[in-house]
Length: 424
Image (cartoon, rainbow, N blue to C red; front, side):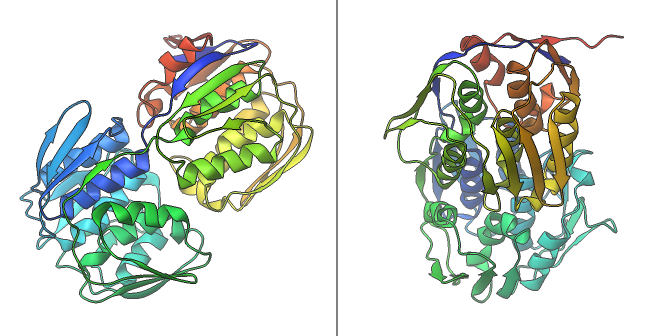
């Protein structure tokens, strides 16, 4: 199945910000280990999150689910699975979270995934776990999944994390309270607010000292947690509106998450003007974009959308600090650079990012989504501001892993986007 996208002069309307994917995944992992009934309200129900719920059942937790609420009776840190194999499908976050928490299993467990996930080497993640005393190894020389977790718990101790290893921080933290001794994670950069956002879910204590996180031996308590809505989860709609003569309003309740604040900061660097309140983010009219120099170390997942934005900004934009984007669902640096060049963008690929000369009159053509929702979503936005129709292959299925209503939302906003069967 392909996507056909025609140019749009504007998209208009209101969008409800979706629940956070990472908060849904992490709270599910904590619930598996917690003592008692945990309630997760308003979870994001997509493939990358439901795989965690299925894993909870496989590991011995009792699960009840509805459209608006998941209830999980945790295992009090004692994995009781009679299953020796867990399937994370296409989710890198899920396989890391599950690998970490299954170190508490008394018996060996294999962590697997689909062909795309099995092609993603994660040597720094496995090395960090082993440094904490976990008995975990890849079954392949390049340290890509499947992973073999021999279980038996892990010791704890100290480990130093670089910029790439820091992306695995949620997974390294999830089982840390159950280590035999205090876990101490030394970071290259100061910890972000994301760390405290996540660890508060299970009511555990974590100490931050300069660039060091300390987690003493303790246990997650039962909790009731409403997944926060994330403005950044509606990023494709916001970016598309900023590049066209549009009026859009993204509604949300609660507070902006760390990822939200990073995303909005990046947009402001391009000169995009928005109204930000406690209930919504809105913007109107085509924006006058200027080139920017953006350090994406803390949020490299936004690189594809920001690359599209840079194509319409005046001047040279440098996106850097995103080397970890090369080992996500695809090599996002190479993938978006290659596809935007097909659309006649002027893009220079760097080891840790991209250099983009704008503005460019993008041209619709056939492009490849690389079975990666971030690349596919960015190409949809690029197609909306191009001349002529764009066909996106290898992208439809990937959208289901992160977005619950991607197509219907764009269509409701007035975009001309549809499915199409590939030519025989």
